[in-house]
Image (cartoon, rainbow, N blue to C red):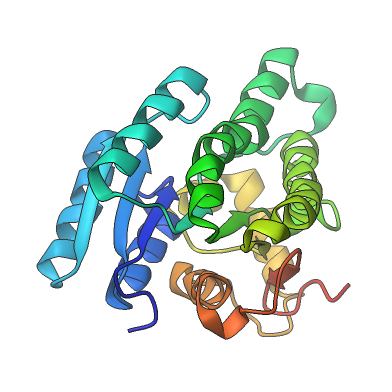
Length: 252
């Protein structure tokens, strides 16, 4: 198995893409640590992994709370003795025109989609540096690469993750830590289904679907396959890269 004996932290691991990452990495031998603000969801995913014969643990964690992040990461490192993989997956968006947003909206979206990942990465890095080994993957978005109507601040935060990926990859290469980024397009997650059910937003999403060359939305498992590539030795000479998984909607 490609990830045998490795310990992988997945933020937002309680549902959607995070759940898919946990299940796939565990199937390839990793001990997966599901972190989620909704602790019951994280525990449910960990139990699902164990029922498949894999190894998993779960923690309730709001990644926007720096002290809580540091405490939880230390607890994980102390318990498992190592941290090999970090998948910065947690995220959320509220789709609306920028002119209708408030400063409170900006703070929430930036704290979760950008600053929260800084907290987690800052806490995990010392353990990877000490081991001279590590793989980090950020889940950004094509909204951060090419822009997306109704996602101005979300897109800004995700663009920040792309820039952070590239800089961190340069800084940490000397410690044998690889850092890469996945930019999903429209992917069928619980949050996606909620947006699809909204009459106004859903209409826009259905219109976008027609422009996707593969003529469909993505699946969480398809994004997880890209993550698996980045955290496995199959990408051992790949760092600082941004890969779009959007069914061909964006090709830049």
